[in-house]
Length: 151
Image 1 (cartoon, rainbow, N blue to C red):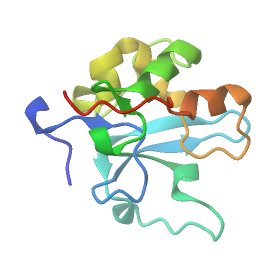
Image 2 (image 1 turned 30 degrees about the vertical axis):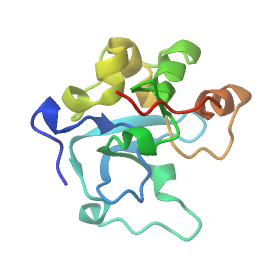
Image 3 (image 1 turned 90 degrees about the vertical axis):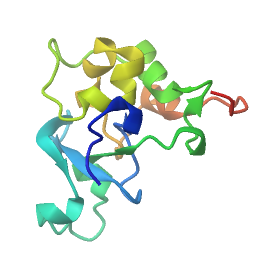
Image 4 (image 1 turned 90 degrees about the horizontal axis):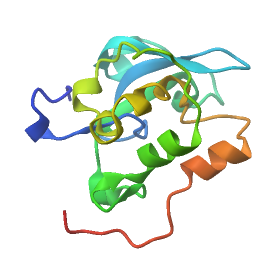
């Protein structure tokens, strides 16, 4: 799978599960105490990186994944938008003063819906953290409301 060339081909999720059928690595997690994501120049399949992770290390501890947005199949999608992107912008501080170089921005659901504000927080998003703060737990919890299916 490659990043869509046109918006009509679908938006990309910047926090996709690593085991999605079409998932691609678009960032590498760096740091120990203060983690951050460094973006690749283009998304690639995890297998193309030639990295064998040690036992007990989850791919999401090392990489950020993207895939076509699952929309209604995703627990964060409601009222035709990504509620995770909304919560990230509302609840988390910025971690970057300028837009990071990102290979999926033109097709990113968070950028499309929340703009620059999402990008300034995105490098701080790690899908798998060993020490989860109460704030991160709250941000990553989807709303308990019924998902709307009419977009």
